[in-house]
Image (cartoon, rainbow, N blue to C red):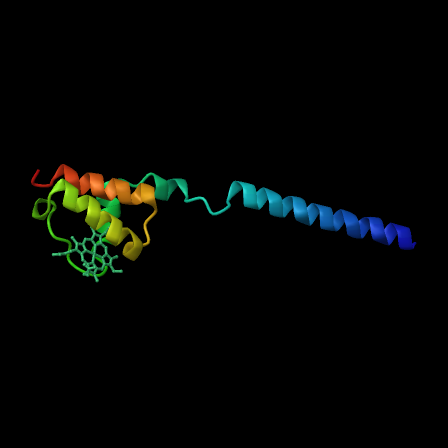
Length: 96
Ligand code: HEC
């Protein structure tokens, strides 16, 4: 009687661990495909105007946008990939 109870308990724990592992492996902390697919202009429009109006791309040079990107990445809580996309978008319209 006791033995049966134990094996059932073990099985339940094993199934629970397996489910947790599957969820962690498939979901984890990875950004969703929808977020990863966002373009620089989308990320810029969604994140860079929460705190201030963003100056137009022509307001700064490509080099300046690189530095601004590093500063604003931490403020806007962007990943490095997202920051690179936003900076590339701004640099494309920059004054040099
Ligand atoms: C959490 C709020 C916040 C977010 C989000 C944010 N910024 Fe800022 N930003 C600030 C603050 C505060 C300053 C002024 C202080 C400073 O320069 O650090 C600033 C300054 C700037 C400046 C300098 C303006 C000037 O005339 O000198 C630029 C350019 C800029 N941000 C661009 C961006 C871009 C691009 C993004 C999106 C990636 C962004 N910001 C997201 C808060 C934010």
